[in-house]
Amino acid sequence: MELPPLLRQAVNRALSGVPLADLAATAAALSQRYREERRDGALHVARHRDALAYLAVRLPATYAAVRASFAAIAVARPDFAPRTALDVGAGPGTALWAAADCWPDLVEALLVEASPVFRACGEALAAEAGLPRSTWRGADVAEDAIDGEPRDLVTMAYVLNELAPEARPQVLERLWQATADTLVIVEPGTPAGWQRIVAARRQLIESGAHVIAPCPHAHDCPLVPPDWCHFAERVARSRLHRQAKGGVVPWEDEKFSYVALSRKPMPAAGARVIAWPRKGSGRVTLKLCHPDGSAGEQLFSRRDGEIFKRATRVDWGSSL
Ligand SMILES: C[S@@+](CC[C@H](N)C(=O)[O-])C[C@H]1O[C@@H](n2cnc3c(N)ncnc32)[C@H](O)[C@@H]1O
Image (cartoon, rainbow, N blue to C red; front, side, top):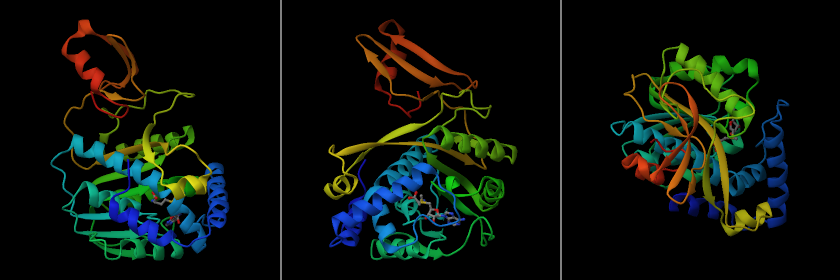
């Protein structure tokens, strides 16, 4: 997946003239904080150079994960056309760009972000890009209420891991109260990220939410550690991205876990493919999460006829 051209150009403009060595060192320190899931009371992105490093090495991946989550919602609910959005922990406005790309009817968005540096960066990226009308608000979502009318689409991407565990239930409750229709939570696709998604999903189902994706059911997640539910999106790396990360290949696979929930009941869904399909001659093995709440591998061969043909065409993350 690539960033939309206008976002790519805005990022390139923001990064032009930034010394590569500085970008690479700041990106390495930022990645280390994220990997450690450090919660020391300090914002990870507190200086302008942190925000630039984020744009170079994290934004393409978080954009890809959020956009892929939105794509799954659009498949499950082709009639969903949000006009208003709220994004919490917005960073540089990643979810706003992804939502505008997925849902052209979006007209207005509120972006809540604690870091003034990130807010300034996000506002600058969005300027003159033809994005929906957006308001950026500085607030701590663990402390402050979210005011205003509930929004059609509410998102929180890669933020739960930055909140203290004891603050998460209340934040989720606030987000749900702010949701008129659909709430999407995205986390890194690690076992810990999946556990946070499982806990959020359980809490929100108890509050009356209906699961849109990825689970085709509202039962407890059938996966048992060390297994975990996650997806992967291949992200194109620009030359600067490669240089800042010291990578050689022109892409990376961003692993993410997510859950999308609605206030509206969902129609019955097909099984979800929850790992790369394993293809052989005349056969394909899919790891599936089923509508009855079970999960496991299933072999399809030519003898299965039409379902085999469909099984050969699906990807990790698709619905069968
Ligand atoms: C990893 S970034 C994700 C940014 C963006 N959502 C994305 O997916 O690219 C996490 C963001 O959450 C913000 N954040 C963390 N704790 C917050 C809080 N308590 N209130 C508001 N924003 C917070 C951080 O400042 C940061 O911008």
